[in-house]
Amino acid sequence: MQSPIAIPCFKDNYIWMLVGEQGCWVVDPGDAEPVLVWLEAHQQKLAGILLTHHHADHVGGVTKLAQYFDCPVWGPDECRTWRTMPVHDQSLLALPGIGQALVVSVRAHTLGHVAYHFPEHGWLFCGDTLFSAGCGRLFEGTADDLYAALARINRLPVETLLFPAHEYTLSNLRFAQHVEPQNMAASQAITDVQETRRHLLPSLPSSIRREREINPFLRLHSAELRASVATWSEQSFQSEHETLRLLRRWKDQY
View 1 (tube, rainbow, N blue to C red):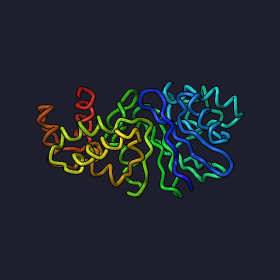
View 2 (tube, rainbow, N blue to C red):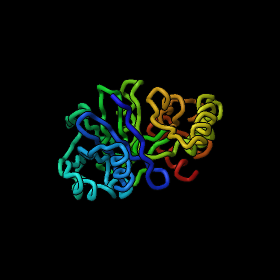
View 3 (cartoon, one colour):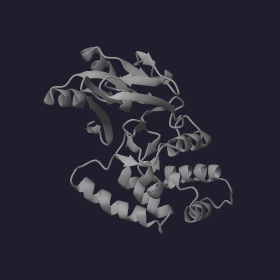
View 4 (cartoon, rainbow, N blue to C red):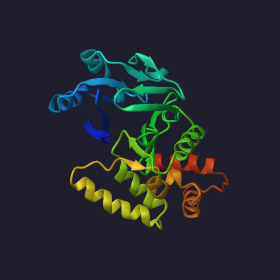
């Protein structure tokens, strides 16, 4: 099975293209034009659209694409304006020529945010919930929601490949290095990603194994990280929930 293809969009978005024998599927097409250009260049047709959440940079191209190709649009309740097929937590979707996708609720960035897990291929399309070396802002959900969402993702097999919707890796890594300066994996990742981006290549996908090494939001157990958060916040705390809440606040102000 061909690996998903990153189609750059706007300043730092990726539209993920899944290529199958019976057509292509896209995840979160914020703009129709780069999708149409890619499909024409590769002589492919669009079979369907998957939406993770309702923000404009993820849904802006849906109407044009769906009308042009007369294809289904799967999405959560918050995407009811654009979707034609509803999905809910634990919905199982059959994508012809691609495989089965399990819908996973990861509410936090938005209240209805979902991810799409393809167990057969080891793929997770996680939208704006989890980024490489970071996580999404809490526009609608709470820190407790984020803790639960990240825990659900972190329980997947470590080989699972992660396909976030934004190229935020380098800036996230700089924050990761700031809060955990002795984390050599994060320091090396900065060097690696700088080289990758120098060649104008995506730093994604990542993997759960890699994120456990470099992503502070999956490293709440780290004594160095917890000490850094305590120093920054001038608070004493015990729980990972509280560590996450303060870490997210710190990142918002970084």
